[in-house]
Length: 150
Image (cartoon, rainbow, N blue to C red):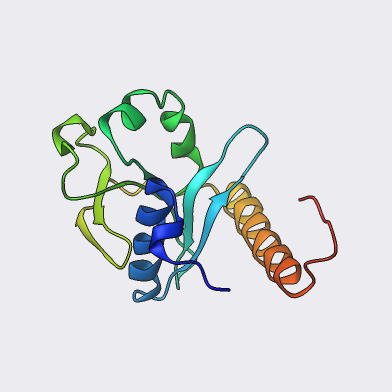
């Protein structure tokens, strides 16, 4: 049974639109990607040239102001973006970060934050984790009876 936008939490709705949009730019995406214990990125995107983007989805002012961990996510990607809906007060968001306006069906990149290239070892590590997470999720989708922790 396929999930509809009505079955998703507000942040998941934004992530869905972001992932759809990035796919149109030849990016592969993973929602709720964990690069290390204690960190969960809303969307991690791997681009056609190996670039890694981190996108944090914020559904409200309270959601944004309660997030005290976002700066710790900067070290996991070459670019960092916020994804919000069109009603979000974007003046709250740090201007040195990227900005994506999204809904459950698509998104638009309004602003690119600065590119801060990952080091070679960090890039290799994150890319391998991304690939393993994606493969494990595909395996779990095909074999729902098997419990695998990753």
